[in-house]
Length: 136
Picture 1 (spheres, helix red, strand yellow):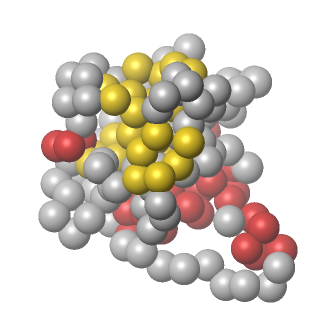
Picture 2 (spheres, helix red, strand yellow):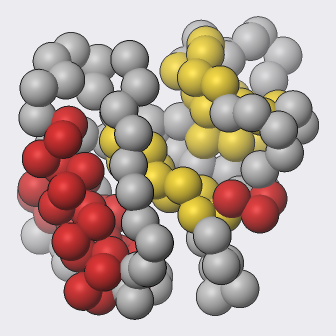
């Protein structure tokens, strides 16, 4: 997104939930990912992509995720700090979601960015019953 803005292009608008995700990412300089919780099977783990793994990216072909940090469930990887999969993408039918804010260094600002995300989701995406948890 920063490259897009730096090249003089405008941001694209998807839906309010994804747009809040993108705004907070731009404000914080941290990668954020939002996923449809109804499409996530089992527990979410954050791990390194394996050599044989890939997934269809949103609006892209297959993305090789070997050696990249990824979010995965019992069905396999579905997101990374650089590109997310079609399998768990947010759509108009999404009722429940999980948003991940990723920091590879200092976590001291995560509470503030989580609060900012919740504030924007309540204001612009009709968010209700929102909560956050910091996992290290």
